[in-house]
Image: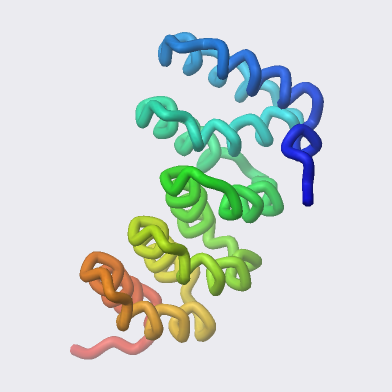
Length: 167
């Protein structure tokens, strides 16, 4: 099993610890904004970790920053799907969808079985953005999800991803 401390680079770990000791969300946002200006691997690593911040405003700022990054580290995006909290997974799925990261399809196959309905709904939306035959196949399966919001998201994503149009 992977040691939690070994998951991140030393610089990223230092900033994670600093953010953990900073209860003021405005100060956390300032720290993250300053770190985001540094175009180094640890900086993006920190942003992916910050999607787990308890403050929605912080998460929204981080989401915006990651969506603007090009190129984006796909490996870190996929690793974020493996760790709680659920809202960090949902945010990572939004980024994967909007960036149309096709390499994520094998992970999405697993994520659509997540116990959290919001994560499954976000996966459906990401699949709709990515499109393609494999994504459509996964979306058809999500139309049978026990949660009505997941089913609705799957239906909307199918319409978005399907090349078939009726006039």
